[in-house]
Image (cartoon, rainbow, N blue to C red; front, side, top):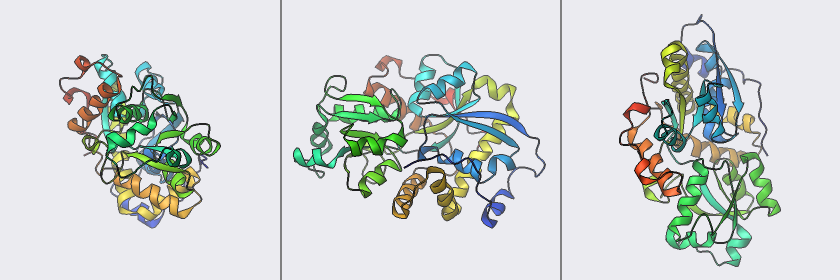
Length: 340
């Protein structure tokens, strides 16, 4: 279903207009790198920044590479990559373990995920989608689930939902890491019983009648409601990097600002770019997936301490951290100076 397209989409008149307020036309070119944990629409801001020519206009040449899951953040911490897109779950856990990281933009403020189950299993177990979450979540017991990455936000969300159903996430469900491009096929083949997934995987599964939603972390009445707003995808780097290479952080932050702005002000053009990026053929699936993505993409992409705290609490609820490891304050691990 998915393919990564590396050719930039031609800029439209609308794009030219939005970029006119951006960086100087002859900005000095800086080279940098950005690690993405997967191929998924939660990283739409980076795709639009590249394909719409925003990075180029800002005077940046950005090498984007997929480094699966939390390894993307580890690449930043080790110094092998300048930036990563990482969830607040990953960033706060790194900070709690004394890694000198900082978030400089927040491009996605919903969890980004649903927990879905193969429709055939839901029917066999007489699943009631209208039941309270505590009842719905009991259906997960004994089943096999795919997540985009182990110990990352899709895994944390799945574990939280299992706990809401009174289950032991370590004993009552089986979890395996699975890249988003492989998830639809795995569900179709019955290789897994369910997944914790985001756009466009869930929209595709629903469109094909393969899956039903057990828990919704994305839109409307969110399960559980305390996750209505969470730092699900931030642009992260090392603190010292923005000291030593401040112009690069200024350009990257401004590129995130312009890309999210472009998505909101010119949704048709942005949707077309993302559809080609992700090779989404069905227009209905694309429209639904893009709308979910747009709803979760704040403009401007400001980092919020409360949303980081919510992500930190996900670490504790998922068992990734002990309660006494929770950060006392979040002000030292983010700045909004580059996205204003």
